[in-house]
Amino acid sequence: MNYQGVIFDLDGVICSTDQYHYQAWKALADRLGIYFDPVINNRLRGVSRMESLDIVLEKSSRSYTRAEKEALATEKNDTYRQLLQQMSPADLSGDVAETLETLKSRGIRIAIGSSSKNASVILERIGLSGAFDAVVDGNSISRSKPDPEVFLKAAQALGLPPEKCLVVEDAHAGVAAALAGGFACAGIGDAAGNPDVTYRLTALSDLLKL
Ligand code: B16
Ligand code: MG
Image (cartoon, rainbow, N blue to C red; front, side):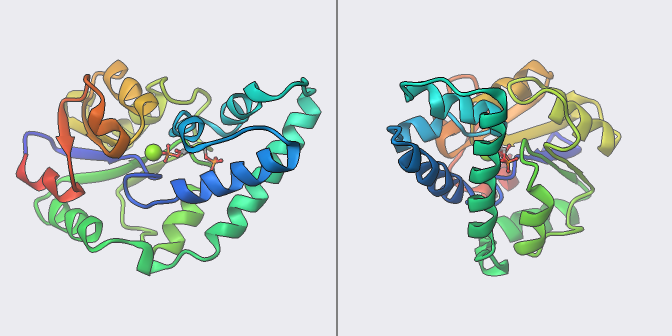
């Protein structure tokens, strides 16, 4: 591999919290009588909580005040955090665990670059607290993906320039963020179909062949 650091998105790359995001948004949309489906949910990948809410509310017939929106975002997050309780180290796939271990054994520095404000809870639940050289998440940034801030901060925390780091993303917003920051980007899942990615991964361990 020609990179000294790899910056991983969390939801959809390291673990499958995307299904819990879907369930929590769906519960909120159903309660409000707003249409919501997996296609709309795909647009929420990598996007911050409040921006996600705006997308969910696009199908609403009424408008919501800022205070109402804060309450709705809190309601969704409470449902989501409840769902996260069922996660355990069993939710860390062997493919992901082995890939991280092998990269580390090769001296490659690894970081998390996530939009989520729940990143540390998730890492703890799947047994990856302390596994990364740096964790930059939704609490440390002011601009969400597709802005490159989260990845630039992660590279800085690793002590590496963007051109020496590879970003791994499952979301189109995340791919755009990586490229805008001057990073190469490997797409997995939804983002493997993005025409702009530098590499396409079927499994995370494909990284070890680069
Ligand atoms: P939270 P990632 C993103 O995480 C999710 O993909 C996105 O669906 C979510 O809205 C966002 O985090 C904010 O999450 O509500 O937990 O702060 O993919 O960037 O790791
Ligand atoms: Mg993601």
